[in-house]
Image 1: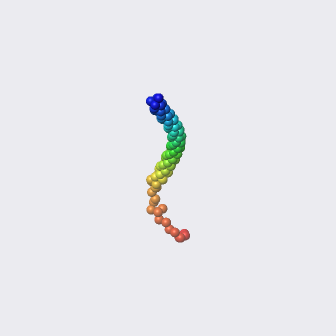
Image 2 (image 1 turned 45 degrees about the vertical axis):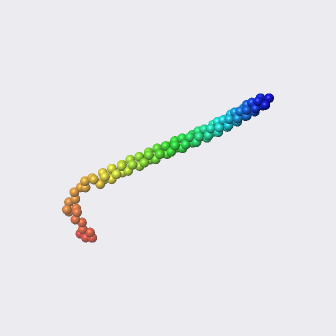
Image 3 (image 1 turned 90 degrees about the vertical axis):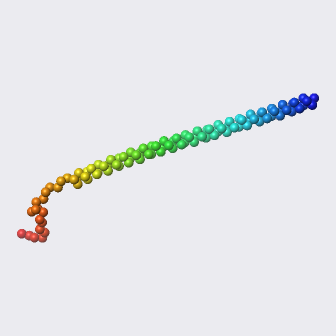
Length: 102
């Protein structure tokens, strides 16, 4: 009789421990699933932010490219005006008299 009570106590204690392990495992799975859901949301948010940053950087790059192109065109026009040969001026035209009436 004492032997069966001891055996019953051992089996009962073992069952209790197994039930505790199962409950802990379920709790850990729930925590992992919750973390995974939070991590998925965080990754989704980060991906959206990265996409926005890519769009912004693309717009800046295009704007910079347009500005450089306009500056090149302006520089080319200035160079054309500056590098045009000036017509030769005769010595008579170069000599000016100011304040004399004839």
